[in-house]
Image (cartoon, rainbow, N blue to C red; front, side, top):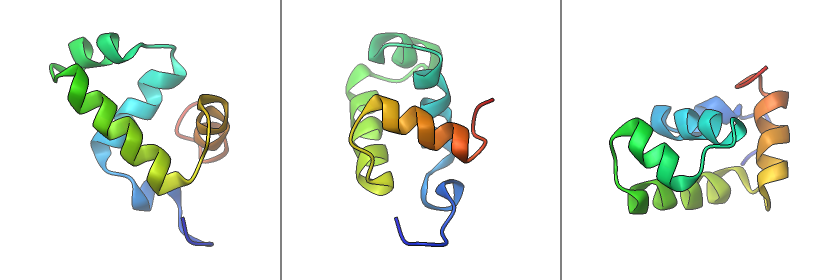
Length: 72
């Protein structure tokens, strides 16, 4: 992610939605069921989220979400 870019600017709406569910401790299966998409699609979104944000762990992702006010 380039300096100055906001997370919300580099992530799709669906990716932000998935981050919010991850921070609520939803599993890939739970997310897939909740959003009516396949588990494989959730896994692809997660992979893309990590690549776009350059975070290396779920803890980093949660910290990023809090810092960028995606969750409270």
